[in-house]
Length: 419
Image (cartoon, rainbow, N blue to C red; front, side, top):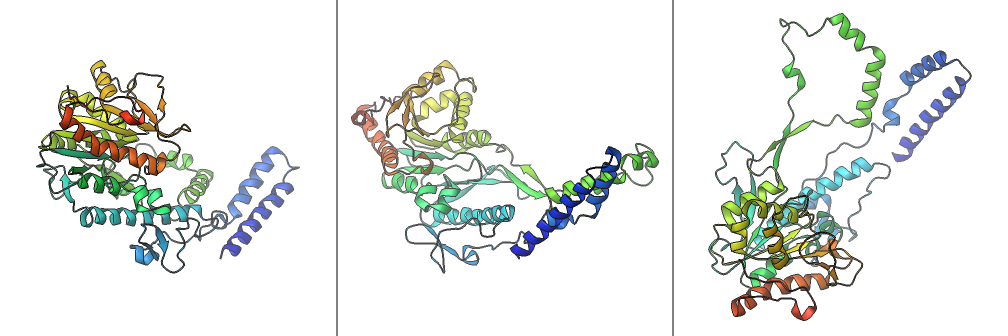
């Protein structure tokens, strides 16, 4: 099939080149006319690979013939090979659609792990959502709101990742521990934490877009301009250009869709604020710890901008990983900057050895190197540092009222005083 596509495309290109050579010696006006005539005779379907396979993909891992093995690695059920992106050569768009379809299945698989392995439950957002309105959800451990001691809140970055994921690409290409939040959740639960897993990228419901024809004026209503004038503007050459563009942009005539935003959760920033107001702020835990990755760090700083006093009174410490926040662009207050200097630490990608203190050009929280493996959020060194911080901080807090969880490792001192 691929060879026939290539032959067809090559022959069409050859015809185009020959014809262009034939008109090279003609006058400009004649050239234009000849090229227009040529374009009208070329089979655009061949040039645009109109016969690419339909975007119809399996609905389950089993139908994809993939499964996660005992190590949490995605492998082909027959060959044992890792996932192959380029299933069909020269069909990048089809391969990308296939990858996205698999990604949606992986998302559902992670939800199942949160519910079955971690014993977490969904909480629908908005909390007063009606049956017919778009809604989202977060995940709560069984005692998330009632545990009087410790609460861990996880916020991922932007993109296609959903609740329980750090990076979809790592889940598919490496393993579940590399790309999901499950290792953090399991470790926290072992240490007596309750856990809330946010879902900041589930912001809308996607539905089929209504046809524009439904909004056209009725036959009895006058048109904005005479039909004859409209026809002159919409001449044959213009139609050809639009048809050419449409075949290139959307050869399979994919259904156009639109997004209906979820009330009070239409962005990552709104989502974090909403979950704080309706869940974290109402939780019984005296000591709240937050891990926020990438854009999740920006959303946390926006939370500080809107709920500074409440956050200072409830949160002990925040671990950021490659945070996208900016104290300057987000116009944080001096008191917020001072608090983050004492209660936050940002592990960032760097060629420096793990945990090397890094300078910041602008006022910011302490920054330390995560080494070059931060994208996995799970290099042995970094995972150890974060889990050490998570489970040692509250113990030290309870013992002495101020915490220095990295003192023996050379980290900047971070106080757990919430004032």
